[in-house]
Length: 112
Length: 113
Image (cartoon, rainbow over all chains, first blue to last red; front, side, top):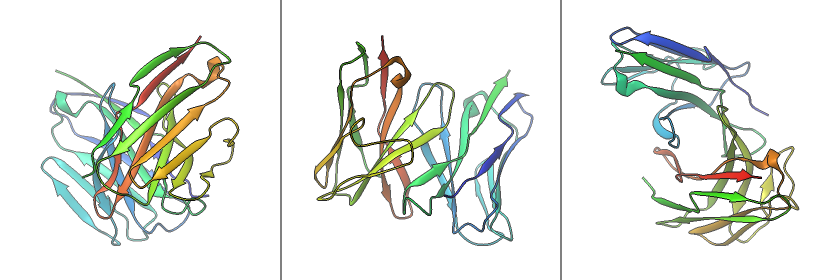
């Protein structure tokens, strides 16, 4: 089935610093989704990328989908303490049809 | 996006017993998905539940251990049977909406003692 590798596993930054998490697949993806899970919470959908080379922005968050549709990144500019949480990329499993398979996630901590 | 009511939110259970988790969606959906998230880990898909047919289980998960019901298009249950401490985890249900990603229930935090 489909798998996606996500790095880094953890990142600690000072408030105001930038943060990036990366997801990589060995196969071409139809699309990729990103989720944020706050401590003690459940995953919340952030965005879906579909097109090769696509770049989408949500305020301080920038999402990119690689030209080959095998990798993606989430970049946060000037982190704030509210950005704390775990960021997951997710892709559709070939075996499970429309079900999502999640990367291992990157846990971001921010100190003020 | 869809609103999912999941309950119970948490429970502490004795080993050997069973717990049924319920998810109610505020609108009709074709598929519902059940995930497990162990502490500090990612989400692992347990099964996909379609209304009117048997659930489709992922490798490592079997119907006898995790029976699922899907009686209508807005409701599903997951039962964790014959529990052991290794079943301690967070269980989440989820539904998909085109273009809106997946919406998750608030999760059931299960502790087996």
